[in-house]
Length: 129
Image (spheres, helix red, strand yellow):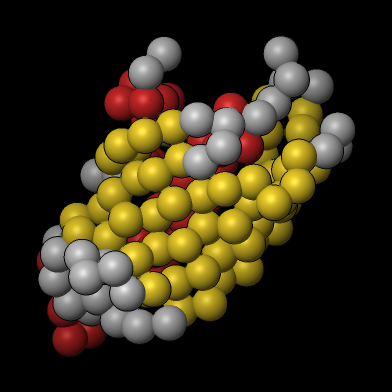
C-alpha cells in the first residue's frame, strides 16, 4: 500500500482533506490546506483541524511500527498551539519517540508554508493484538 492509499482507510481524514505525502516507520508527513470550512473566527485554521492532522499523521506512523497483525488506537494526545494559520498549507511530520510492545509514543510538528512551527503534539498509541 502506498502512502496515498493509507488516508483512504480513515474516512474522517479524507473528509478533512488530509494528504499523506510520505510514509515510513521512521517518519510520516502529511498536509492540510487552509479552507474556510476548517476555520474558526478571523479565518484562522481551527485547532481541532490541526489536532486531527497531527493525530492522523501520528496514527499512520504508529501503524507502520506495529508488529504483524496488530492494530492501534490513540490513548493520549497533548498539543501546544504556537501560532495561528490564516492561509496556505500546513505540513505535519510525525516521528516515533518510543516503540514498545504495548505503546508507541510519537511527536508531531505542524509547520506553515514558511516553515514556522504552528503546533507540537505528543501522542501515545496503544498496540492492540
